[in-house]
Image: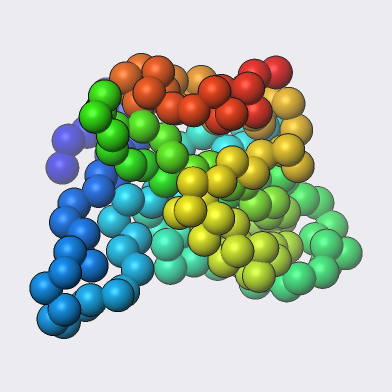
Length: 173
């Protein structure tokens, strides 16, 4: 494993890229299933000024979620840190890859008290909407939108340039 000067593992900010279509007409095993190969969870934390991919979120096992008991009640989180779990879907067109869908979900986490808030229905619905090419970021604060925009632009200028005007306007703060 590659390490930097402080002996910490290097962080990899990689999006999953669309592979084969499981519904390509063969009708065999896996036909009609939903592929999650083209979606990545990005955590945005405005208080820390960070945005990064954490694939553990696909199974609620991200660094943010580990050792935290989540409820759908914000009042159980006494000292919350705001995170946005943003589902980013990548697709490809003639010009190349682009960010097709982006949908953010609020999470409040108190690591010290090991308590957190998240709405599972919101997470599932927003993941689905992202996969369908929707842009849902209006509930996010301006700083979080700015961090997400910079992260997406820095990850791949080509993908950002190929993305819809709707996405660019939604993240323009």
